[in-house]
Image (cartoon, rainbow, N blue to C red; front, side, top):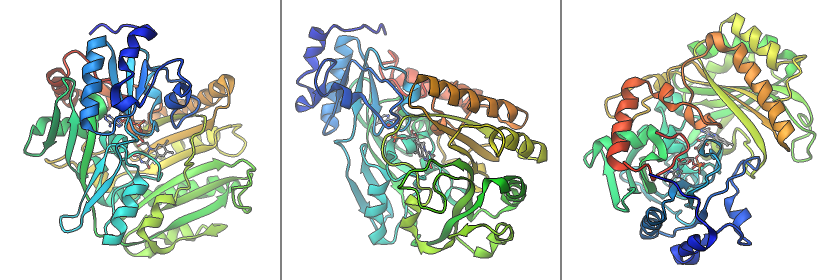
Length: 453
Ligand SMILES: Cc1cc2nc3c(=O)[nH]c(=O)nc-3n(C[C@H](O)[C@H](O)[C@H](O)COP(=O)(O)OP(=O)(O)OC[C@H]3O[C@@H](n4cnc5c(N)ncnc54)[C@H](O)[C@@H]3O)c2cc1C
């Protein structure tokens, strides 16, 4: 398909789409409409549209085809970096297509493509049910679920994508399709990990779990303790039972008033997570005498803010890698590059604990059946301007290079903030299958996704 740069008068044909909920370049609302969660990005789509339902999405797809434009779905823009600048593309923002319905007997949630995780947690909790959300209440259910999705129950329940039971989408020829294990199972398989490549998703359905309480919290040490804490954590994490999921972070916190006094402006080491069984499993970490220890039994919905992720858009640079193992030499390399005296400017250097159910693939799973690594490394630095962004990126790349001997192939795509080669993550057989579904559903490559097939 040839992508054309449409002049503004040609684009004005889009003006009446979505009942007029359209922002074109030059419009007063265009700059607000094109922005996303990461304020360091500069998306410049041919138009931004806000459909209210699937028929409006279909109109957008037909109009895009008529004008030689592409179409990209976006719920919150938490993973907008890999989309590029979106020239020649209509950005379909699904924020007007939210809504959550809970079927408590079947333990299934149905959400519109614009729903965010907090919406689901709030709707499911009164029924004693819980979803496999991640660490942020404002991340979109759609992008998270289509890309994988791992949260505090990941080592016991696996990736959220494999809890999906049905997906509805408008395909590249403008058809509304419902896919599940019985209806076009190959498309259903591809969407679960192959992301937004096959159409604009309008609704998702997924399993909920009868979980009302967890033993969760965080432990904090000064970062001068990093060399004492990380080796113990790594030995413990490698052998921990599946009912525990944790994260280890080195954080350099700014002196902002909204950060609580004991840690404001400090550099710390923090382990947080959730236990769904005997709390005694945390004893080896407690023996390290954390300065703060908040682990306690709490209502499961409190997990959605456990990690204290930023909820308002901000400018940042992120990077990621899969870590296969963390022996002593890897710990030393990581602390040399990111610990005290390293000179690292990164606000967060994080290891998310994998294994357990994340390592077990089952026949009903989608294209991303699990993650083959011991940790996902995620790094993040503030990027108030281009120089700062380059500086942060440089440091993140140095850390990745230092850990290269212990790193896996590909990346966990939900954490990849830049264009990466998704074929490395999927592996040759899955990649060929994904390409075949893409060729069948979207031979003209009309649909543009963050991690393009
Ligand atoms: C602060 C923060 C915390 C995070 N925490 C976690 C975590 O704990 N666990 C985890 O696994 N990940 C986490 N992530 C990563 C997150 O899962 C990805 O960024 C995910 O892609 C976000 O989905 P979204 O819909 O909010 O973002 P978007 O940027 O809106 O969507 C990402 C991609 O999904 C596709 N997509 C979205 N909506 C549609 C649609 N309606 N139709 C077709 N395609 C669509 C598109 O290809 C789009 O480019 C976090 C990210 C951030 C920034």
